Image (cartoon, rainbow, N blue to C red; front, top):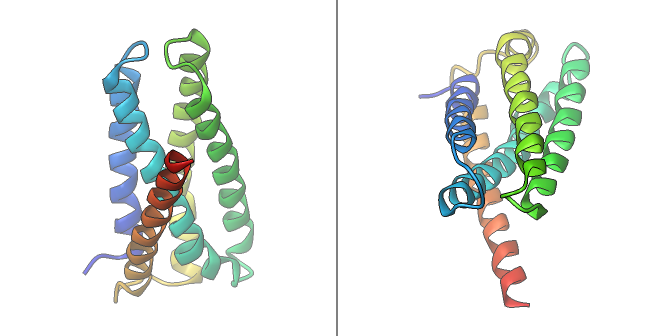
Length: 158
């Protein structure tokens, strides 16, 4: 049985790998498009599920509120940059510059979660040794992916 901390860290490892692979691409290549799309949709679903399953119960505890609010605010900032990148020309130097900002900011966010927020959360909401929070996160992430896929299909239909 996995805990919420292991589930989030597993996603973070996948996201770090995708960020590194995207950074190695150049121009408006099919590889860059595919990797960035994969990153965008996975991080979007991850963040929404994380806010509901992990940060929501953390915000209910006075000790957890500052960290949870800080992270949710960072999610919004990262989401704005990711959406901006989706609309930019991937072959432009501006895209690469903005992507480097995203990579730096998201790597900082993940490190902060893993090294600081997880410790605070374990004190506030517990170790999740029964995997209940992790299960909620995984289910919520799958539901979020379906919502993203539906929005994408609807956008293509119009």
